[in-house]
Amino acid sequence: MDKKIRNIIGSLIGVVILYFVIKHYYKVLPDIVAILKNANILLLVIGISFIALGIGIISFIWQLLFEKFYGIKVSVLRAAAMVFLPNIARYVPGKFWFVFGIVYLAKRWNMKTSHSLTVTVLSQIFFMLSGAIIGTSFLVYKSQGLIVAIFLMVIEVTAGIIFWTKLFHSLAQKNYRIFGKDIEFVKEIKFDIGITLKCLGIGFIMWLLIGWGLMFCIKSSLTDFPLNFWVAIMAIYAVSYIIGYISFFVPAGLGVREGTMSYFLPDVISKVDEGFIVLGTRVWTTLGEILLLAFIIAGLLVKGEIRREHYEEYK
Image 1: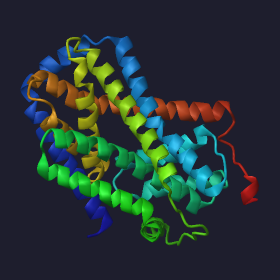
Image 2 (image 1 turned 180 degrees about the vertical axis):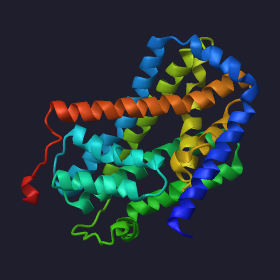
Image 3 (image 1 turned 90 degrees about the vertical axis):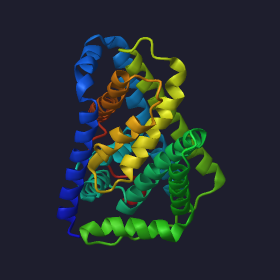
Image 4 (image 1 turned 180 degrees about the horizontal axis):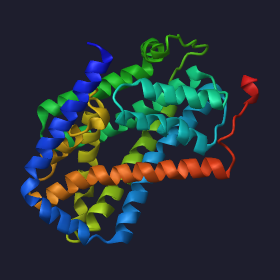
């Protein structure tokens, strides 16, 4: 199937799914709007800040892997830019922009494109893997057999990509051929248990921060919402995010993520509160990404790190 046609179909699918999600909550939309009007702004800001911090944590995985495999210490701000700015491209149909963002920043900072692309993809894999482990634990608890099997498959595939060097290189080459070029892998990527556990640990911290951020956002309007639901909220969001992420045809998992959250939220939550959480989560996480983006750009400008760079190893 032609890429343009596939992207158009994916966008349409996302819009249709989102339409049915909104339609499901249409009758209670006035109540949801009323809840939003009574939001505690301070708690909302704290929540969005936690989400931004959680999303930004993945930059430490990027920094750790780049130094581990290529012996170069990159600043956290540049690592955040490398891993996060290209990731915004998931809102645009097609994977061209994701790879283009990495290639552009790598060339600007005179990093080897193969190194930057490799580490960025690996960071995304650990992001997915840690979320899949959290999501699987929740799904086992909820006795969702079929979806547990799917998530176990996600874990096995991502782990396989990490430890099967030739497979990972093959996938990276396939992505880079968007530009009609081949990546030259001078050095093979080989993981050990230590680096794997460190990256997974950072991934778990990331999801915990996002979970707390979502809970703060929910509590900003639903003051009586039980705090002990935060684990479920974190796990459900991880499940919905990954299902949205692997829905390759749909940009940013539009509609898919909301539909998944709606399905898994506990039955004890009223329809009004459920709609508020489902629709609000998309808004809060998007605002978190915007906040993180602003922080990265401001930080790079203030520290002068947006300029072109020449690392000694690459001169």
